[in-house]
Length: 226
Ligand code: URA
Image (cartoon, rainbow, N blue to C red):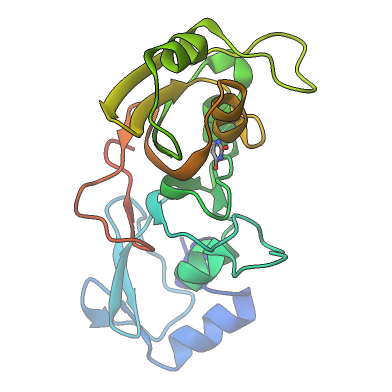
């Protein structure tokens, strides 16, 4: 693929912008500067750099992001900055989106991608993808509350009770809750319906993807195995 088109597809701007980027000598392929925007490169295994920062060529981008509190998962946030302001700009330009959303005060694993099929498969209610949350409750979590969460709670505006597929007590006020649905404020509403209250919510996994232990808040990493 021509270098100019390749950079465009990776999110580095419009074709004229990418052409100018190349002509100004800011782009290198495998360590060697290339100022010819029309030079052809094989994409498989390609590594290019822009202003000295090396990027692998990717057909699709799949990221694990450690969402910090006080950020909104929206391109048009209302009360807090957007998580997209924390990502390299070219990821956003190429259309990387959150796979489902977390509340502004929720922390932890957020998957991000520009692969629409992956978003659909991971968020579709029919796929039953498990999401694991560490829930810090306001009050000690009783055995009865855990039993209620596992049996199912009736939420306003939901036709049928919603049950957790897993719920273990980690400490007096901390539980590990697994749900397969992705409804608005789901965990907070479930815990409230069980007679407690969420004080802090942290997501540790989505499907088979686990938040990397060494990923700092606001940090991202390529998703393993994609
Ligand atoms: N459930 C909630 O209540 N909030 C989240 O951010 C995610 C799940």
